[in-house]
Image 1 (cartoon, rainbow, N blue to C red):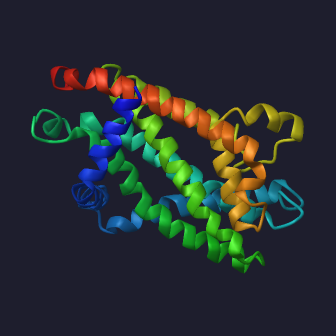
Image 2 (image 1 turned 90 degrees about the vertical axis):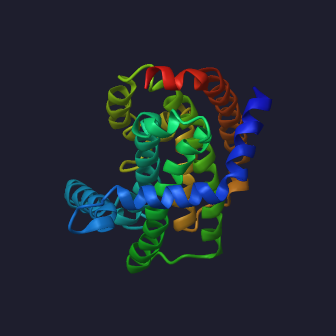
Length: 264
């Protein structure tokens, strides 16, 4: 499994120019033919943020955290969640979407899930800057600790890579996995500190989900929270979980890859 994992990463690196070009074309093609084009990549998440803000700010008499306004808590949780959900849903269906490429022996299909993650990353980077703008307008200004966003972004990309190797590989054989993920995502979001603050007792249980580490890390980066090495115990858990998932995902990918063209 370790050899298969390293082999996939090697192929992705060797095809990095093709990967960037392919992902950028994929990003543009998502909204091709619509009047507003790629603007839709930003309108939908912004409307979602404003809706949550309007609803929950009226439900709560005060912000979600006394240290800063609710909009800061909300935005810093939704930014990584939007990236995760968009990448997972698009990458899971990538082999079926590009079945004509999968059937070509000369095309390296190993870059396809990563291309979807990179395609979603373009909008994500813009939203990070928007997030800094919103937090600054709310009185929470970025500090040097904002630099650790690069670390947590790396964590999220590697975790997404592990998950999508598994889901994208099984989707051609189990088409219903897309429906399962759509349903599961609605539940998973409510088990994370995205729009609500779990108590310490509940948080201990919810931290089983590695995404908890990333989302809380994003929020700490935006709000001058602790450095990532101060939570080294949970960091070790996250990376242990992610590495195991990478090994499983690469193993499944390697075994199912020769059969993709048969079922697509």
